[in-house]
Amino acid sequence: MATSADLELAAMQSPTRAGSGGWGAVVALTLCVATLIASEFMPVSILTPIAIDLRLTEGAAGQAISVSGLFAVLASLTITSLTRGLDRRKLLLGLAVLMLVSGAMVAFAPNYAVLMAGRALLGIVIGGFWSMSAATVMRLLPEDQVPRGLAMLNGGNALATTIAAPLGSFLGQYIGWRGAFFIVVPLAATSFVWLWRALPQMSSPRDARAANALAVLKRPEARIGMAAVALLFMGQFTLFTYLRPFLEGVTQLSVSLLSLVLLGMGGAGLIGTWLIGRAVTRSLSATLIVAPLGMAAIAIGLIAFGTMPLPTAALLAGWGLIGTALPVAWWTWLSRTLPDDAEAGGGLMVAVIQLAITLGAAGGGLLFDAAGHRATFLASAVLLAGSALLGMLGNRKPSIQE
Image 1 (cartoon, rainbow, N blue to C red):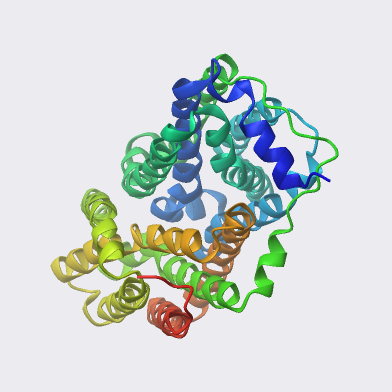
Image 2 (cartoon, one colour):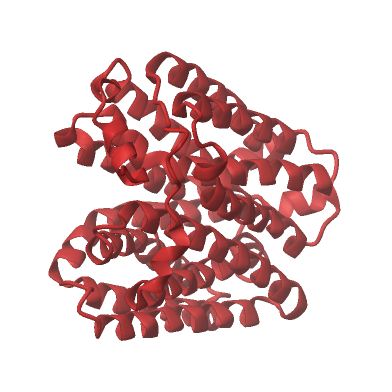
């Protein structure tokens, strides 16, 4: 009796795999991913204008990030089973339309409720795209080209993560936060047209059982690793979400200097993405321990030196260098620890990351409003140190290979 994995493999090996879609479709998917990630994190750099315009606290405005993360979790865990039997081409095109609608809703939001609804739609698109990204690339490209296709998707993710904050700050300065978000609309329309032209039909067996991502947690090494990933992203976004009000209120930077600092952080992130491969090759386990400890130290440094522009800029460059690249190490861990359950484990990791972003942004907002940046950044440091500790515990397991 064929399992769902067998049916999916058969579909991947069908003639549509190297059909008319090919690299054009992969590039279109990369544009979608980059647009999604930029949209997800753009509020970081325009949090204050959003709060002022909609008459919110900065902590409440920060929930625009947490709500997208929450709905991404729900989508990543359920979209495979809910859309069983639906042609993946139609599903991806539908998600592109939702991305366009989300961008328009946020850009023209008259109040907080519409803003959050638009961000919730964005979360559904994020969870759906990321859950299917690897399997889609495997169906679009010949086997020997799949690694390059996946690298292109990850490159789009890294680039969007790098430019989202400085781009949002720059655009917000000249065309307002609504104009910055409206940029998503033409990009989503372009993605839709490109996908429409490039994607082949990709059938999904209606009688295949969806893989149970939660079953991966039965393995002890998976539980430790996923907990470490959760603490890493919670710690990262407890701090990262509230950099704009911190840099304006504590460091007292102008909007132009703030954009320059965020751009420096993004540039350092690109360098980190290039360097992380060497660090992982040399010692994956050491990377998973030392890197979050370095980020925790930076969070403490921002508490101590946050009123001084140059040290703050240097610390944030270090944050970008480590934080942008570190997820690559955890995806490498996944491929080594769960080689037979990589698809289910990947879906679970998407859910864990998005849930952690949600909790980090939400908890950081509550702390920032109630106790200020010191308590928020200290909480970030504690969470990051916890991730390093779990990485150390996981290193005792034979599954984390050097």
